[in-house]
Length: 118
Figure: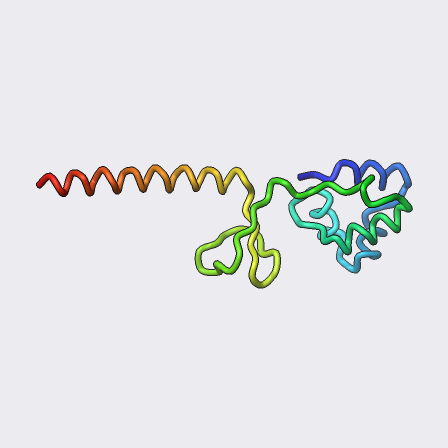
């Protein structure tokens, strides 16, 4: 989810993404992904940003609501690696896969019922 509050305050204070990236010790493309919401900001990063912008953290903080975390499933999980044990998948993809799995489970039950009739 795009960090609109952060972007608005950063631009209003005339602070460029390069400066924010330097403060967080990351390259500008990684910082840009954090503002776009495609990469997660840690709470420590939120605090550094709030200090830099000289605002309370609650004026810029926006949660990553559209991400579901799947833990310790390296063989079956897909998505962006958050750290060595966690993966994030957009909520829309997760919901779509859940519906597909439910449909497959229903089909399996129907096939079992058909086989038991024979």
